[in-house]
Length: 91
Image (tube, rainbow, N blue to C red):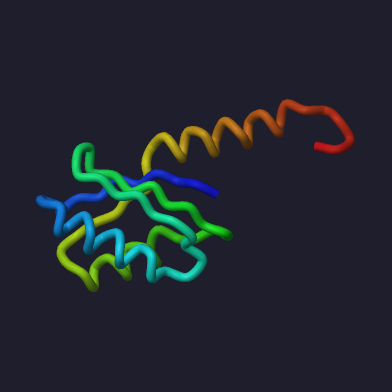
């Protein structure tokens, strides 16, 4: 699964590399794309990974903060609402 996160505290490519390296050390993280402008990280995982786990890892590399993108929350809400509207036996 692929999710987008906002990352604060990055000011240069060195920060981008530090955040990327840290996130790749989180269990079940398969791939990471980090960019400075806008300051985001796109993380691909094999299973659900908590934002707290991601934050714990990047905190070891510097004064960075990671927050799940609002876009992900809206997409998740829409998916759940779509499932509720179905009256099919298979969900």
